[in-house]
Length: 214
Image (cartoon, rainbow, N blue to C red):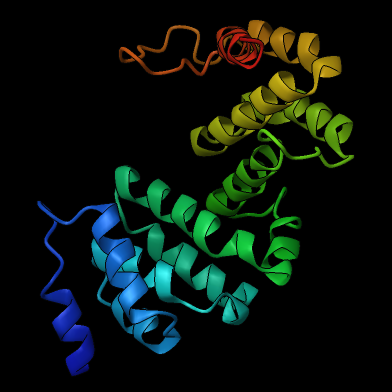
């Protein structure tokens, strides 16, 4: 594939050992929105180029068909790159447009593991500090209780994250979320680095609620 001069110049600025996310954001700010360039960078298959592509693509052009294509391409990356790419796409593009937000809402039972992960991760993000939780908590929690133990690890994490946010910010569901963690035992024996919050629901909820109350 013949690359444009602009794409080649950008690729020469990306170095896997030294380029950081902050550097990509600065570069993206200088480029602004450029969907054609984003797709050209994406087609290189390179991790940093794809991260930058996500920052400069036009979310108005993100159809289900294109998202499916990006999703399939991410599947070629190792786990330590695939998950940051889909989460980066959620944070920087999918959550910024009403059309793509509506698409995400249809992905709970998608055949795509990554799209199911996005569905749950976005539901959890809707419950952060300062936001009024959507009125679908009861339905979500019931679905988590029924399906989390049978889901793929990538999706389990996002479902667990959503249950945690519900338990932290919606006290009326807190005991139920803690009981879910106790029943499943998910992440109970996970090794957590110093200064990091555990994913085990009873511990995670207790730590975050304490922070809110201090």
